[in-house]
Amino acid sequence: MRVWVDLTNSPHPLVMRPIVERIRRGGDDVTVTARDFAQTVELCERLGLDATVIGHHRGGRRLDKARGLAARSAALARWARSRRFDLALGHGSNDVSVAAALLRIPSATMFDYEWATAQHNVNCRLARAVVVPEAIPPERLRRYGAAAKLRRYPGLKEEYYLADFEPHEEVLDELGLDAAEPIVVLRTPPDVSLYHRFANDLFGRVLERLRGTQTVVLPRIASQRAELAQAGDFIVPEHAIDAQSLIALADLVISAGGTMNREAVALGTPVWTTFEGRLGGVDEQLIAEGRMRKLESAEQIELGKRRTPSAARIRRDPQLLADLLLSATSPRKE
Image (cartoon, rainbow, N blue to C red):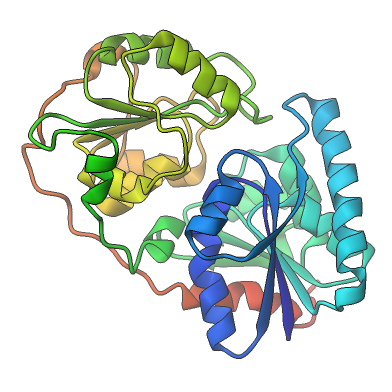
């Protein structure tokens, strides 16, 4: 079988890497495409994913996103037409879902945040299989036409793609960090996302609280990196780094997004979320279980070395995710 995997954002190479490996081990051929956005292409190279780069991000406004979807989907369809793929896969990639539908290729999508309405209205309706964590209540996905297509998995997606991961201390030397002093990892808000369209004032106060400390700030886009460079007093990597090792070795993670928060949970590092959008089922569950905390004020942040060892890690077999995605080749159940 010829399988096509499309990657459109920085977390996607991490999520899909072990899935691609498992599919290839099963004897199928896998071809990867990637959108030039944030660190997506650089992470593909770092993880050994030989990706063909097609298209780029068009901007955060709705009109820009619509134009970007149309342009990149058309470009993907032109590229894929002669390759005769049997299945197309993505982690929330609207582009590959549309392109696959144009070419009548079965597709499967996966995601773990249910309130990205515009994205899911496209993906869930076009895909044959919708792979989500069990923490998302199925009734929240009916509006997207996903009820008969759901394939649900236990735990966090991060527990699957980090199953074979062990941290490397070289990242501390790379960033000039002193392991004897507190290390904080900070992730910027997803300002270009449709589901998070307002300024995160709390994040600004967090920056002021951490100014001058051993804080590594991981921006999403070039404009954020430029603003942080002007602010000074923070460690801002110029290129993609081994962020998972950094998270595992840090004393605290604070993120306005989702994936990095859940990576911290999966790696046993204390984590605060500053996300100001509507909480999804996964984060609701993590907060209820005390595995992640909601930051309400910058004054809640206490700097110091960890007082307790990392929590025991849960490692799950990525073959389950691969099998759920591949199930899209089975006849529809609708």
